[in-house]
Every structure is written in structure tokens, then in C-alpha cells.
Amino acid sequence: MKLSVIIPALNEAASIRHAVETAQALCPHEVIVVDGGSVDGTVRIAQTLDCHLVESSRGRAVQQNGGAAVATGDVLLFLHADTWLVPEGREQIERALQSPSIPGGAFYHRIDAGGVLYRLVEAGDALRVCCTRIAYGDQGIFLRREIFESLGGFPNVRLMEDVRLMKSLRDHGRLALLPGPLHVSPRRWQKHGALRQTIRNWCLLTAEHVGVHPDRLAEWYAPHWKQGSAPNG
Image (cartoon, rainbow, N blue to C red; front, side):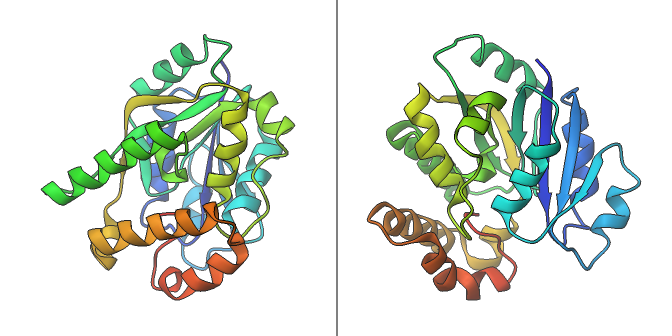
């Protein structure tokens, strides 16, 4: 397996080094950082690391598609800059993709903070994936490159691009939810409150499910996003 790890970034100076170094621990074919116009030290730091730096216009869908366009691996793994996957994750992906019926999947995630509420959030997210076969981007979406290309990549929308990709992906077979864990920074939940953040995510998913366009959802989400939280987080 030639694994391409793609990391979209925007003003992630505090976390980009850790993101790239832990991605390299997966022994990938390549690590690609796609910067969306950072104004902090993200680009400067990334230039010192063992990765391929790509500059892009802002937008997670655009950035991830840009990274995939230059990737040369046969399996794509999309990791947010505030997440990191344990080294065993690579072997888990390889084992899962030995089955031709599995086009891709995601990971159980572990919020790097103590407390019962965070464990409940993790359990709820795992239940969501099991019931709906939809994972968010911060759960480490991976899939076969040829399938990603056949789907046309991430839909070019301002929000919920991960949900829309997963909805298309599940038509190609059974999605794998791997044990990981994929560690996630607690910053979004700590900044806005774990319960409030979780309710907002579920409301967004429900609104998208009933047909509200992602661009309209992005406008609703914008005040929260500008306070320091990325979409779908």
C-alpha cells in the first residue's frame, strides 16, 4: 500500500509540526500539507518538515482536493491538523482494504481530554458512524484513490464536504470503522462547551439531511467558525 496522507491547514502554527511528525510515524508514501492562506507561521514551519507543501485557496474541500491532485499514493488518508493517528493505524487500514468490498472508512476517535462528557461524545460519534455510515473529517477519512477520483473528490461546498463524500462512498461498499484511535485536540469542545458543540454538529447534520444546502449552513455556522472552530469539528 502506498499511503498518501493529506493535511489541510489554516493558521495551524501551534499544531502543524506535531501533525506532520505523527503522520510520518505511519511510514506513508508521502505527507502533503495543503495551506489555505495562513497568516501565522504555518507555512514557515511546514517548510522545515518532511512533507510536500502545497498552497491553495481557503476551504477544506478545495484544499483536500488540491492535495489529492498531487498525491501519488493508491490510498488517501485525510487528517485534520489538530488530530493524530497512532502508528498502528496504517496496519489497520491495510487489513481493512484487503477486502475488496470495503472502499474506505474512518477511525474511532479519542478526544485528548479527561471527563465523562468527552467519553459520551466519542461513544455518540461511534454510534453515528455505525448507524448512518457517515464519519466526520476529524475521524480520519481514508479511501482507495481510484474510488475518490470516481466520486469527483470532495464536493466543492463550504461546509459538510466530508458528510457528502461519505454518503457517496457508502454506495460503493461497506465502510470500515477502525479502532485507531485517532486522537483529536479538545480545543473546539473546550472553547465552546462539549455539549453545545455536539448539539451544533447534530443540528448541522440533520439540516443537511433534510436538504438545507451546505453553503447556507456555512452562513449559519460562520459566527462560530470565526471564533476559532473549523466546520464539522
